[in-house]
Structures are given as structure tokens and as C-alpha cells.
Length: 261
Image (cartoon, rainbow, N blue to C red; front, side, top):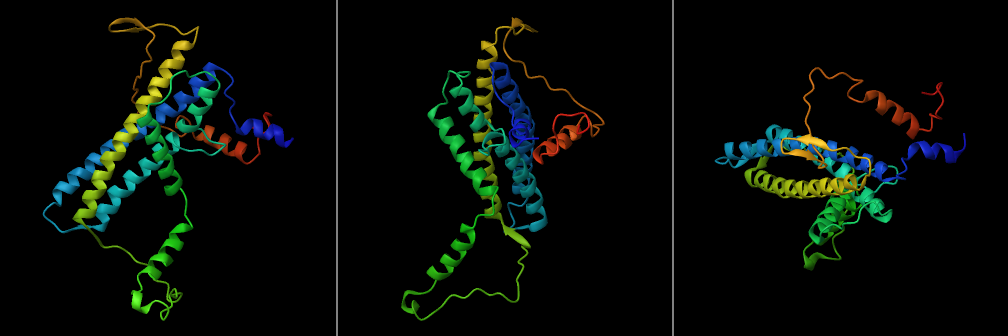
């Protein structure tokens, strides 16, 4: 198989308005789910903050548990909202393409644009092991040398022993700052989700063969978001088969044949 054919499977081409709706829907659904989890975990953090308000310190096992849950959901939301990798779909890149192809006529507000770019910066920072962290660490050590000793003191990193620092407690203020940060981020995520839904409604309205849906107020072409509760989830319904095929495609091990399926 040629390299060109492999690339065809790795990328989903948005050639029609219907394709655009399908892609945007595939982003909206996980964002709704992850945002609900992010909101619930943020509420949980506020309860813990109140519980420890009379203490100067928070046990690390308490702080780390809620911190890690919230951070994971934040990364998931950033993955679907602000990711510019060529082989992935996220709202920030998809919207640019939809506008370019003329499938979207409206533009984002200045505030929404600014928010989306900030989320992209956060995504780029939090998803990578930035080399600048090591540079910054060394720079701060150098800048900490008193002015009268500059030139006579040399900063040398300690290479042995290798010290592994494990935090036992966090200050209450640090926890309070974390809770405040979550509120700010939650508002940003909610704003972008509302923009995603508006875009989806706009494109859906442009489709010529969409059906009217019966609502409590009568027939409507407004997009309905319906939650379905699932009990006893199994791997196939959870998408493991799709993920497995996707991994084969990414590795170039799928050519569309029944033998490779």
C-alpha cells in the first residue's frame, strides 16, 4: 500500500456540511460528559476546602486525589476543545476548517476567541514535558545569588544522590487557589461548549433534508440533546473495538481489506 492510501485512512475528510456536523457532534458529546465530571469534581473540592478551612494544611492524599481527578478531566476537555495536531480533531481546528469551507457563516465573539486561544496555550503547556522548565529552574538558581557574590559563586546541579521529593501536606491557601482556578476554568469550558452547540445548530439548520422533531412545544428543527442512561457497560459498547481499529490505522496496519479488519 502506498503512503498516500495509508494517510487516507488516518484522516477523516470534511467534504460536506453533513461531514462537518458529524465531526462537531463527535466533539460535543464527550465535552458534555467530561464537563459534567469536571463540575462534579470541582464541587467536591469546594466541600473539602470548607472541611479543612480551620486547618493550616491539607493532607497530601486528600489534595492529590481530588487534584488528579480534576486535572484528568481538564486534559480531556482540552483534548476535544483545543488541540492543533494534524491527525486529531478538536473544536479550535475544526471550526477554522468549517469557516474556510463556508459551512459556518458566523464568527466567534472576541471573548470566545480569546478564551479558546488561552485553552490552546494551556493544552500545549500541560501536555508536554517542556524543556524550558529545566532552563527556568537553573535560571532561578542563578538569579538567587546575592549581587555581591555574583562572579564568585558557581551554580552546579547535584547529580548524586538523586533526591525524590514527596509532598506530605499542602497549605490551605494552595488548596483555595486551586478551587478558585477550577471556577475560572469551568466558566471557560462552559462558554466554549455553548459556542460549539451554536455552531452545530447553525450547520444543522443549513441541511436541506433534516426532519422536524416533535417537542413539548410542537415541531422544531432545534437540535435536541437527550441523555440515555446505560447500565452494565461492556467493552464493545464502550468503543474498544473502534479504538483497536483506530490504533491499527495509526500504525499503518489497516488497508481496508477484510483480512486486516
